[in-house]
Length: 359
Image (cartoon, rainbow, N blue to C red; front, side):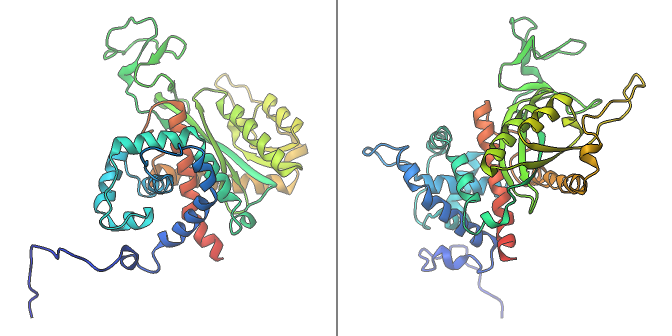
C-alpha cells in the first residue's frame, strides 16, 4: 500500500532527543567524557562570571558547541549556531531541549573570548588527561614533538610595506617582500613563511604538538609566529614542562628540522634524551651536514623506537586539517588561533579515547 504523503509535519513531538540518538552512536561516549570534565571545571567557570546580572551562554554548553565545531569541521561560529537550531544531534550533545532557543552568534563569540581569556581550553585539556580512565593510557617518559603550518585568515594582498608605501598590495610581483619590512594589514601577527624549499610562501602561523608515545595522544600544544627557530624554541618550552611533571629523565623523538647542536645540547641540559633524526644530507654547495646526534644516542634500541613512534604525530595534524578546523585559521590574532588549535587537539583526543578506554 502506498504511504500517504503529508507536507505538513506534526505540531507536537513527545520523543526526547535522547531517544533519537542511536545507543551505539560514537558521540555518546565522547559526551560522557566531556560532561565529567565540565563538572570538574564548574568552580573555574564560576570565577569568570559576575554573581548577578543577565545570564550569559552557559559555559558548559558553549564549550560543548565549540567541540562540535571541531568534530564536524564547521567553518564558522555563525554556521554552528544555525545548525544548533535544527540539528537534534547537536542539541542533544550540547544539552539543549527541542524547544530551547539558540543563542545569537555575536553573543556566542563574545562568550567564547571570555573562556579563552580565562585559559579554560588549557584547563579542559589538563583535566581530560588526568581523568581516571585516561591517565593510565598515557606515557610520562617517552614523547614526540613536531610542528605544522596553519594558514592565516589573510590574503597575499594584505602583506604590504610597514611604511605605508606600495599601494593597495594587489601587484606584488617582482617585489622583494620580507617580514622585516612588510606586515599583513588584516592579521599583523601572521608571518610570510614557506615550509620547505621550492614551496610557495604563505601568511601562516606555526602550531606545535607534544605527543606521548604509548597511544599517540596529544598532551600539549602551542602556536607561535612562523619563523626558522620557532619549532626548536617551542619544543624546548613544551619539553621543559613535561620534564618537570615527570620528575625524571624523558626521551623525545623529533625530525631533521630539530637537528641543531644548540637545540640538542639544550635538551640534554634539561635531562631530556634527544632522539633527533640525523640530518647529514648534502647541501646545495656539495658539502655534507654534520649531525648533532651521534652514535652515543643512535646505538640504543630506544632511538629506533622513538623514530618509529614519532610518525604517529602526523595523524594529529592530518585529522585536524582533514576533519577539524586546523587547515586554515578561522580567527585572526595569535591568541585566538592558539585557542582554536588547542580545541583541535582536544577533539582529536576525544575521538580516539572511547576505543582506547574500551581496550
